[in-house]
Length: 90
Image 1 (tube, one colour):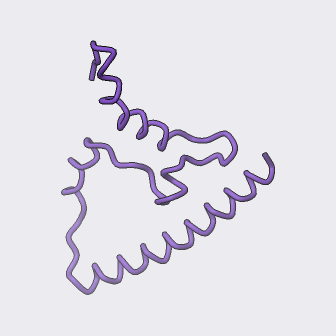
Image 2 (spheres, helix red, strand yellow):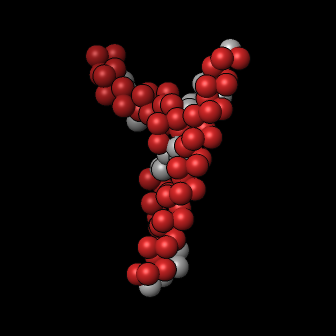
Image 3 (cartoon, helix red, strand yellow):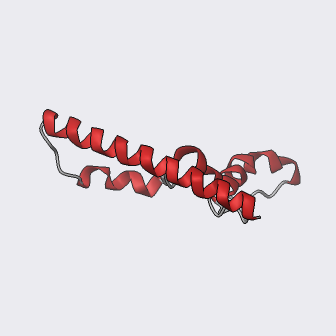
């Protein structure tokens, strides 16, 4: 998106904010997006790959989701622990 008029700077704020939130910070060694959500951001191109996963029956799907949630909770706890250590070190 090219802005040719200097008075249209506000049209770029969402793009700039997204870039900042995805950038790895020097003190924490993580991006703000990773700290808050514990995953990398999805770009528009990522959405085109959604249909490539296998379809499970409902019971198996629930079990997979439960296991993924437990892993995600553990990852969030480990990211926050590492984040605090990085901030203390900085």
